Image (cartoon, rainbow, N blue to C red; front, side):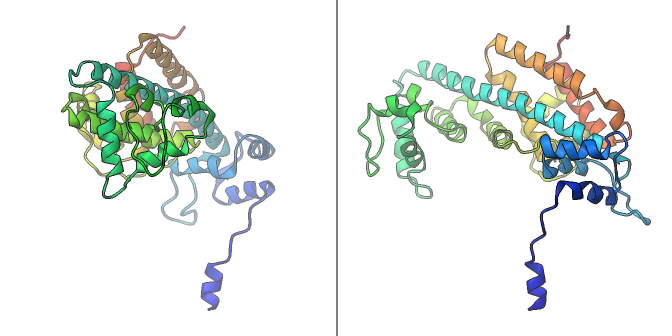
Length: 331
């Protein structure tokens, strides 16, 4: 009884003034970033959980009296990574919403080339399939119905006699694509490309990985923490294997990096962006932002990471991809 009670005791919330001493116990130093500056940063710019999540990218002593404590880790390194992570998330989110936008255009262009399609047929088939789905009936129907009261969608929905008990039908594809989420868009894309046996169906699995990253960056989750974690042992898509081979990334390096889910998701996004986005202007803008981030901000404090083989290896991995597909001269 006492043991069970002890297990259920909640840890008290640490005050900001208690965080620095706690980190010092883990051998995190405050030489390049003074303690008062660290407290101010935690109070005004970021929270403890987010900033300290990057400590997992640094080595710990494996034996001796300091076992479990960090080797050569200053709070300034964590602060620097949190800023890099923030800027990375902004750029990735921009790339992913561009992928979403141009995927819709790609679908509409494909529809025009199919003789038996009028922009209604495939949507009616999809909604019928959704309505009668044995495992998740009316999942898309319910999602659409939730948006009925939204001001943005009122003009669209005012054209239809909506009844929760009835099956939706005759929504034109150009309107349907604007009222579904990115995840629903991918599900429709799979249905559409499979139904007409289109070559584009090969991108479905890659899109699902991109969607995982989209959900993370949209909720401001850290994307550059736990980069040493090997949490994805699925074989990478053959398109990605060839993509990385063209970048000069060998099998061992490729397999090692893609076992980390976040590195895999970012890699898939970099690959798919240039496949789906058709605007050269949008591509040039993203190229510029990638180069500014990668070759200026990320290496601004490169001296912090001279002994961190994990982060250096990941940087060189993405450097090969950017050099091959995104490199441009910065002025």
